[in-house]
Image: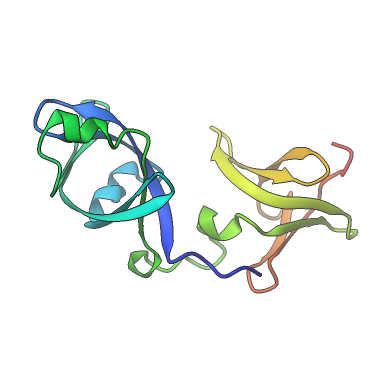
Length: 169
């Protein structure tokens, strides 16, 4: 299995807020305000990670907004729109037994219970009912991440997820 990245993406810069360099943030954490519990952010700009320090973050209406140490005006903030936000993996709390960070599932091989290879997990997304794995192989499949019903086992060490899923679907 490939070595896990020392950084885990937890959100994205969505826009600017005000004239003092505040940023609108999309959080991938649950609950979404947890993104403000991490001070050492890294922003991916042009395929390069740049460390920045979160000064303040808060909910503003139905949005999340943040101030970064080195961003003091709207023009500086505008250059960060679209940047991924990551935090050091070492700062994340350990996952509970039977729970997984999405970043740890991405790249795992997906096999059916009878051993048919479906591909690898490209990414996951949330629906109202459950999370869904986007599995890319000879074609793309959307496989619900429903433990015990669809997902039979996850073996991070072996880099494998076993699913009860019809390969024709």
